[in-house]
Image 1 (cartoon, rainbow over the protein chains, first blue to last red):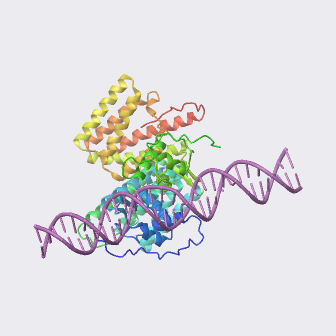
Image 2: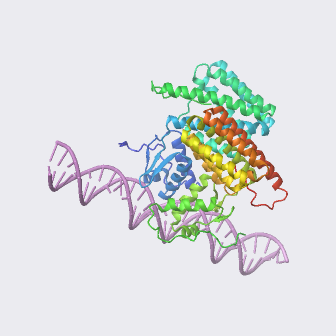
Image 3: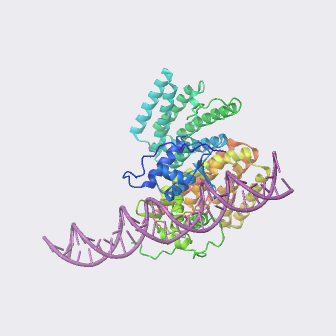
Amino acid sequence: MDAMPPPQSVPTTAGRNGRGRIAADEAYARLREDIVRGRLMPNQRLVEVDLAVTLGVGRTAVRTVLARLEQEGLVVHEPNRGARVRMVTEAEALEITQARGALEALAAREAAVKATPAEVTFMRETLAQMSACLKAGDLLAYSDGNARMHAKIIEASRHHTATRLIAGLKAQMVRFQYRTVLVPGRSARSFVEHTRIVDAIEAGDPDAAEAAMRYHLSHVADTLHEMTSAHAQHRASPSHLVHF
Amino acid sequence: MDAMPPPQSVPTTAGRNGRGRIAADEAYARLREDIVRGRLMPNQRLVEVDLAVTLGVGRTAVRTVLARLEQEGLVVHEPNRGARVRMVTEAEALEITQARGALEALAAREAAVKATPAEVTFMRETLAQMSACLKAGDLLAYSDGNARMHAKIIEASRHHTATRLIAGLKAQMVRFQYRTVLVPGRSARSFVEHTRIVDAIEAGDPDAAEAAMRYHLSHVADTLHEMTSAHAQHRASPSHLVHF
DNA sequence: GTCGAGCAGATTGTCGACAATATTTCGACC
DNA sequence: GGTCGAAATATTGTCGACAATCTGCTCGAC
């Protein structure tokens, strides 16, 4: 099985490293992007020599990159049997969402203490944009605002550890990218929940901010759970997306 | 600076890999252990060729190991300047504790739903042992029971993602290994808190379990915060340990 | 005496080659 | 015709070597 020729995407810039300094880091970023963006299918075998020519580096560098990606949870590696793009099941996706939620709640709490006025202003503006998108019925743009909002809250938390962990979890999820806002009636409630979070942050109330974020994320998780349950029956909607 | 001869610990078993299969994994486990157990000091330079001879593997394998450990957050790596054992500041230690707390709260919630009767029994037994240690005044043994308890809750959660993340965070902390139970009066309250957590898990109440764990961990964080604040003044107690 | 240029040593970045192991293919035998 | 075994192939595991880069030191000029 898996006899298809390695599509491998990204035709490779060249054999020469151009003149970029650290070829290995470049290779890491490139391969990571290919996995995260979904250009490489799950369970796709990652043959070292193939990657070496594709990425324009030696096999040793590829091996290092693979080790990093395995530690990051993006590839799995069986001894003497090579590496494959990691396949995340829906159950794992739910786990990841839960863990991410726990950490984002912490981030919201910290943001309530450490957010600058400029950051709060940005959140308010984003909220306004989201409201506009909602009225215009542009749910996709709303979802983008949603993402910007969460990113800003995390940034405002100045919690390096939480930020790092959330980024890692996010990378494992992008393939899924569910967007709960597309569920009928979800977006309106989502907007109210976000408003409350920002209110708490602006008021500098950590408990309220954490609680609001937790409340928000529990709804997201519930929606996700329902979607995956339903999905088990008529599995025909690949664009069935979720997003916080 | 740093002219001291690399102490490197662990005299190396041999040049031959004995007959263990994957030498690289062995090397990874060994070096990781050396860092985590504190045999290698923070900011200690990790010269590849030295590690190669110490661990009995080639430099390529060392390089791979270093990449994994960097991704894991145990070493830092500056381009062309080599790797060093990562130095975690007390501020970062607090961050890690907070993140770990958020994830353990999640684990407690899941454990309330998924714990088997056998696991609950184990927790009750551990609780009994802790109580005995408390009466006997053996705080160190109490702390061990403490660790077993938390490990069991995490195991009972069957939450692979949370388990993985917590393990990673724990590894970065072992150097510190604060033991809050050594703070006067802390251990008694700690015991009550743990009892409440187990009660909630046995009752199968996720909300209560999460809340109890959150309550417990907030106290741990507070104690830790006070300790580090005090520590800033008379920094003379290296055995100043914290533990959940 | 101090400062900068240039040199020497040390260390990392990168690579291809060789050995060990798994997978596939092909042929012989039942 | 099917199945078991053995060679052939493919792929990974490991290593030392070479080049690039950084660090520290010496030496000369001001």
